[in-house]
Image (tube, chains in turn yellow, blue):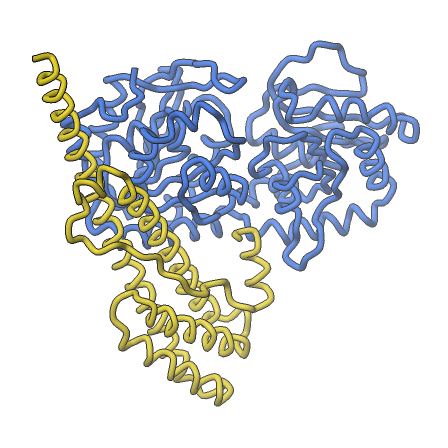
Length: 177
Length: 386
């Protein structure tokens, strides 16, 4: 009898813990989805800024061509998979090259720094959410009881989002690294 | 934006984090944002700005070698909940949410676009490691994490297994730049300055006091101006002037009253706000060669905006101070370098960066800050209260 009671208590405790963990995981998945949406939004803003910059006639021809190509590339991208990382990296490089010809104190440079900073924040917050979700997904109770269900396994988004190589700007952001 | 800020420590007890919250709130209000702060206030008669809500008093608890002022209990929890409901914030910004304070209480009761700033740099502590998992459940509700320094970021990575963007502390440059020296200072014999708790060993006043006799050999009239609370065990030389605790306006005047500002700290510094204040006042700096200080003293052009001395070594400190006292030209060049470097730490710049975090997080969270349904269901889950 005592054994049955002990087993029943254990089962109830496990059920409580499992349902609590399931809700925790739900919340983390929701945070990942929202962070992914935010990152997608900031990347889109960056692509728009790049496309506008590519319209400028006074930039070197090669830089403008690269920029326009890269901006079009990311505009068609969907999701945050590995392909997207490659395309966004190409845009990072093109932006960096093009901005080398801009005045470091101009409004355009400030605009680029703004979107680039937002992308780096959004990416940091996204990867942070992914890390938290993966940590909970690794727990035994989640694996044993398949608490993650059909929710896709979140993955990190890796790209080069370091500050632009404009002297003043690079120096000013040095303490942020 | 509608921004809710949570101060972990009492509004009426001077301290770095509270000053940060106050300065940030004032800057955000100047920028046109709708800001509300909730904070513990120990003295019920203490005057507070209209945008601060009282959360109750704190209880002192000894922790980790010093006294933490904690806030617990149903009264504070109720006030936080009401503040959250009435505020309907676009973003909730908690300060030091890893401590058992009002910030954690707010975190337990909220969900949505939540930002947390981590101020402390700590060595790994056993207590924190033990508390890590209940704390983790709450901390993972924070959508955007900010560290005030690389050291604070490292603490987050090591203790909580997360990451953060680094946005430095700010300083109101104009307030410090425009202050006048105290009457009679710096005087003809030269003057050094110190700001910080005088009985906190890590602030290093003892090292500076040991350095003074070396300096008096060459500069017999040299005076030392000390501003900060605390008690000393031994009497000091008459050339050392102890001001005790000063308000912010007088602190700004202290920097202007000396030829060289000295930061002889021996460790435990996450950032080094005093260096920013000295730079904003245009005072040349001699500082301990700590990681946090070295970073703040790196100028935008790669040069140093202050002189570094060996940590805990009075002779090295005396040597660095003496060299600066003897060279008005070097002091002038450091003054200029400091003023140029500190611009990027002005609150207007730093707050702009923090607003970028708010905007990123507000997009990520879809919708305003709401009450966490689980905190109502099961207030005891992972709760350190009582």
